[in-house]
Length: 289
Image 1 (cartoon, rainbow, N blue to C red):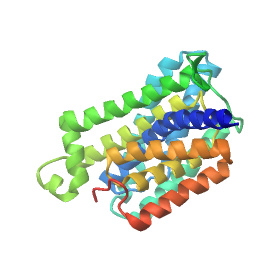
Image 2 (image 1 turned 135 degrees about the vertical axis):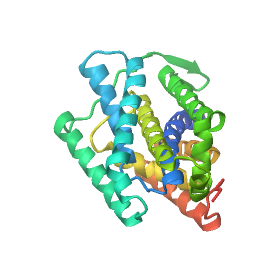
Image 3 (image 1 turned 90 degrees about the vertical axis):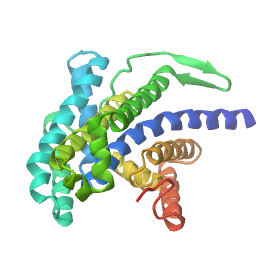
Image 4 (image 1 turned 90 degrees about the horizontal axis):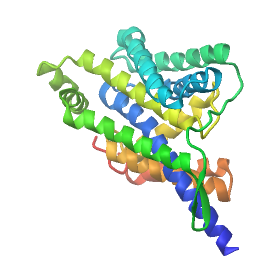
């Protein structure tokens, strides 16, 4: 009995870390857009979903390589994100209510377009790596370990852009003080477009990684958006470290609670953690605002 409990707890921990890193990727894109443009992007979950759907089209329907999808899907969704920022969000820039309505509208439009073209069925992508690791007390999927490594690599790549490039300096300047960055000659509209594209691409990459783990369907973005909001608020607005830590915490909580209780109770626990943190630390664990 004790061995079974330990085995399930260890499995929940491992799955939670892998899933938490994927959640952190989704939340990172949301945090970038929210921190720089001050836009609550309700269509962000659909960008994650589209990344997974493109992977299904490439791998399941067309027989192409999963690794090719890791490159193509984020680039396509990043381009889509930049187009949406230029064509839909820029005309309502500076009007919070209009941006909320615009992103909600985008969310419904993207879901319906995917439903019409992709259909209502859910598809899993075959993992590029099969087999398991035999660990003490548990047998664990090799792909989930690779998914965790890919998530860390993507997070490292984004950090490299933000802290090692001139573009990253502009993005961080716009995030810290929008008006001052504009006064110093930074093309803030260009930064907004690039940041929206980067956040969209990161969300799509998370969708690619998640596609062998969870079935991709047209409505899955709603759940991804909720998780991303929880992670961003728990970690703290504008904090990349907070996004990373909160993603792992929420991932472990949801995975472990889902094994011992049920997914519904797991989500209730995550929301309870969010409420508790907002009561005692309104800015989140590592909030910089």
